[in-house]
Amino acid sequence: MTDPFPSCSTRHPLAVITGGAGGIGRLVIKGLLGAGYHVVAITRRGQIPTLPDSPDLTILRCDLGDTQSIVPVTAQIRAMGAPVQVLIHCAGVIVPQTVSELDDAAVAEQMKVNLQAPVILTTHLLDLMPRGGHIVFVNSMAAIVPLAGSSVYAATKFGLRGFALSLREEVKSRGIRVSSVFPGAVDTPMLQREMQNGGSALNFVTLPVQPQIIANIILRTLRRGSRDVFVPSSDGIFGQILLIFPALWQRLLPIMLWIGEKGRRKYLHARRDDEADLTDHPA
Ligand SMILES: NC(=O)c1ccc[n+]([C@@H]2O[C@H](COP(=O)([O-])OP(=O)(O)OC[C@H]3O[C@@H](n4cnc5c(N)ncnc54)[C@H](OP(=O)(O)O)[C@@H]3O)[C@@H](O)[C@H]2O)c1
Image (tube, rainbow, N blue to C red):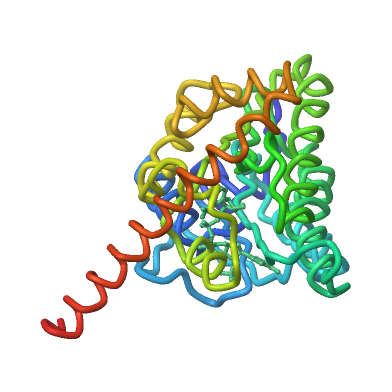
């Protein structure tokens, strides 16, 4: 059989990831490198914090909010001459604003980074994916429940869920798997920025999980080929019930907000304690 990728620059399968410099993404990259992939990280940064340089890590700089710059990046990946075994869409941005105070720039940024970029990247990389390839969308519980105060983020994540489900139908005959991971709150810079800017108390109905847990779940999803994964898994059951009975949300919302407010106070308290510890005992 002739080699479909004769100019292949790496012996390892390629794993392409966006958001690889973020709280979850950088831990996923670590796991992918350990699993033997050559990782292509699409990021605005020149380096991935806390990761040492590695010959198996290629960084391609790209602002996913600048739609024009995405296709040239996919051309660079194509020029590497290797099949894309794994594609992980992990970049995301949230700007909490009520609908009456939405500003156009924040709307465009969330639409482009959270929804348009994954669509464009998938479109332009799909023909490089072999049978057994796997596409993972890092979504959010905001793809299932309404999120007053972050409607645009919720709209992009609802849209991403629709795209992933439709894509799955299209590519199953080619043997390409499509998964979505739906975390609740995760203790990363995104959550911290969100809470400084008036994010929803619903983030704290359950305690925020550590990003390593989500990274492990993404890596396990790749190994097992799971389809849709909710974290915590109780959110999955809750989410499925809400999809069947959406009106239930209105009844549950006051209780959820009450529990969430309590959780938020606990989280902020714990963070203040951590910061005080760091001030008393600097590293
Ligand atoms: N944290 C949570 O509570 C939570 C909950 C549910 C779902 N999620 C989802 O999990 C994913 C990862 O989030 P995280 O918690 O790890 O957040 P994070 O630490 O803020 O990381 C977000 C990543 O998105 C990238 N990004 C944002 N805007 C970009 C742009 N214009 N161009 C290129 N990259 C851009 C950032 O890249 P740079 O390094 O270039 O800045 C960063 O690596 C997101 O899709 C998010 O929606 C998070």
